[in-house]
Length: 135
Image 1 (cartoon, rainbow, N blue to C red):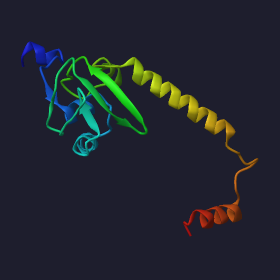
Image 2 (image 1 turned 45 degrees about the horizontal axis):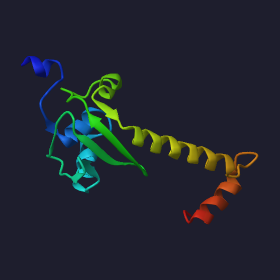
Image 3 (image 1 turned 180 degrees about the vertical axis):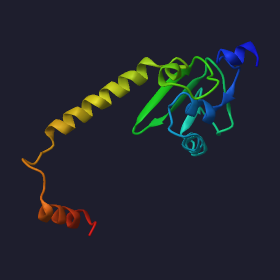
């Protein structure tokens, strides 16, 4: 095996393999599906799952309802531990700010939503199912 491959510093990789390898998606098929659906962009351009990604590229995609942007720092040789995976990319400050703002909004929304004093009993659960249309 070449020295560069042993250090995890490969030249390029498929975007779906890279997203899976750095643990931004739970499975490679989910990463490929996101790329096929046009939700993954490299340097501002929509890409397919087989598109190559290199160190220095700017990768962006929707992570839930928040756009996630990062700069590729390295290409992992395999899907390893999370600590190694986070060394392969660097999240942009704008993306970090968006995530922090979203977390703050969700915390505020959770604080303002009404909470029952106790858990629903069998009768209350049945009423909730009917209300939600899950009879």
